Amino acid sequence: MSEFVHPAPAEAGSRPAASSGGRLVAEALKAAGVETVFALAGGHVMSLLDACVPLGIRVVDTRHEGAASFAAEGWALATGRPGVAVVTAGPGFTNSLSGLFDAGVWNVPTVLLGGRSGLRMAGRGAVSDLDQISIAAPGVKWAAACYETDRLPRYVAEALYRARAGRPGAVYLELPADVLAARGVPPDGPEGFPSPIPRSTAPRPDVDRAVEWLRSAERPIVVAGGGAFWSGAGEAIRRFCEVAGIPVTTTSSARGLVPDSHPWCLGSLVHGGIALVAADVVLVLGSAFNANLGYGRPPLFGAQQRVIQVDVTADGLGGNRRPDLALVGDVACVVTDLTENWSDAAEGAERRRSWLEEAKAYVASARAGWDGQVDGHEGTRLHAGAVAREVARFAREVAGDEVTLVADGGDALAWALAYFPAERPGRFLSTTTALGSLGVGVPFALAARAARPDEPVFAFVGDGSFGLSAMEIDTAVRHGLPVTIVVSNNAGWGDVRHEFERSREYEGPRVAAELGFSRYDHLARAFGAHAEHVTRADELRPALRRAHLSGLPAVINVETDPEVQCALLRVVAEMELM
Image (cartoon, rainbow, N blue to C red):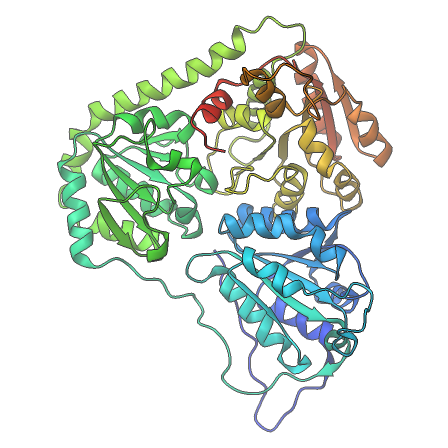
């Protein structure tokens, strides 16, 4: 992950010329290595956006501020670097809150720069005057406002630093319009923040104890979560698993951190979770015991297991499941120490070869169960799982490992979790956040394509979720971001619709859960995107190929069976994970 670069101080006796506040903010972003900002125009922030362009900072303007903040989050998830969004005051700010809070809940380093009515207008009923700091503060790790033009570079540097330091997260920086409009000169002096960001590791006795437990285990397993991704711990985890002979399963933003194809990787927790049930010692790297981990309880975790949890801060340890051994430290540093303290590499890997094969057999049985749901389908419309499976196969066929797959929705997300592979970090982006936000699919896809212009992006989204950000197809066309959006159109909010069926006491209509088989392809065509309408299985692959070869943003509207219900969603409901 790239580190921030601070501008060199001016020569002794010289004094830089005054610049507008907007220019100072843009220069601070440029100095920190920010390449792209996602924004929506507004009078309160135009001086900042105008200053970005001559400095070479790309401004991707969206059609809704919610898409801008989600795209900033998607940029961070795709790159491991902070994503930046710029929105105007009042409703521009409030529209952006879902993306800001999603990043905050999920510990994604995202910076929202929010315009604010001028200081001289405070309390006078000015347009869009709102106490935005108080609104943002509960959802972010740091919220501040800069009231002096000269200090704008310091505040921007601090926002970007705080977004990454310690436990990553979302931050909000408020920029009053008159502070941006005024001219200022940054003060000389030693202000600034460490670069690179310091990292810590766990105490040696804790590391030694963890090694002892893992060495003596018969069926150990590693679960890598989001903290492992932000730590950049992929290589360290791969090496440790090879040396110790311990299978690893990845979840959340850690998907692809260890490639699914790696000999010791079990792939997604959706499949590897069955092996987790059988494990005797579990090493949890950078994940809370939240809903994604079944709260650390049965059926995913067993009461008889010994659980070792590693987190970058002590307040991230325990909760729904008390770890038997807790280590505080950066995941990459701790795992490196575990490897260095493992005395006999050959003994570890060879002794657990049979456990690896057993764990992979569990994964194969899980995959077979998903295939059974798909292949046993007898409806007249396509099965959503069959569509997700074909999208994954096609993407790998045309791009190999150099492809980003995005998933968004309820029912659609479940099938993508089962079928979308991850061979590199930041290549599988989804809505598996603690907030459970929908509508992220198109913004995430745009961010991934902006970050990696030469890699194709395929998104699989539900029709309900697509409706929350469908106007961003216009953004994709205007900015030349050729993403392929496959809409699983089952004419409704599938997960909600099936809630009615799961409720034995409810016999009325499925209120507010039904949509129509709308022609989303017509909408895409109106924006100048490539468009396809698929109603039969034999139409899907040719449609994918035409979309991919078009070189344009594309929407493939696939009519899927409304009656299909994913077994995983039934389990989630039964486990009361929501």
